[in-house]
Image (cartoon, rainbow, N blue to C red; front, side, top):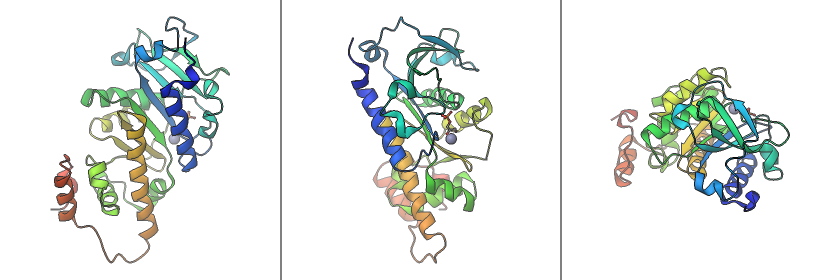
Length: 271
Ligand code: 13P
Ligand code: ZN
């Protein structure tokens, strides 16, 4: 067996969570990540017949039976993950019944997966139904995105439009826009279902006055989407109270989207 601490997926997870902490997106235990792993790759590091614990997940995830995920632990601080991954992270496989997680590695001090597992697994199911390449769901509390939630209408079209206006390349990075949910009780199946519904249409979903979800084919893609929204929100917040003299016009955004040949939400522009 190879040493799992140095597995590329583990290195990537440690680096990503450390960066997210450094950027101020994950105070205390804020934020969580689920990263679908390839069974063959994991079998190089772990005996897949050795189930350490079985943990009920509280909902049914039949389409994910047999799938293996590296998932952050509930209550764990992102700032500490790289120093002690075996306590702060876990590798789980969705059991045959679709309702149980089989722990294959991690959560060493008796912990368990994030309280937001419903939103993660339901979002994986939703994304996989429209994009078979999707492997990552990421949640965090980026400062400026959150600040913008308090002073901007929580309307998908208007919110996306304001973000697109803030950096030239926004419309090329997230042409599908951002989905927006109102404030809801977190850690529940209901917010999971609402998030997954949005994830059929968007790779980014704002949880009103809470944070953001991003999805992608790898950690970099999910991170990059959130990073771009956060940058745009930062510029919005730095300028919202000042007179706006210049702006990127809708025709210019359209030209950019066409130049990059992205399938953008035409109904989110006012043309
Ligand atoms: P967990 O510690 O359970 O992952 O929760 C953090 C969080 O951000 C809840 O939305
Ligand atoms: Zn949160």
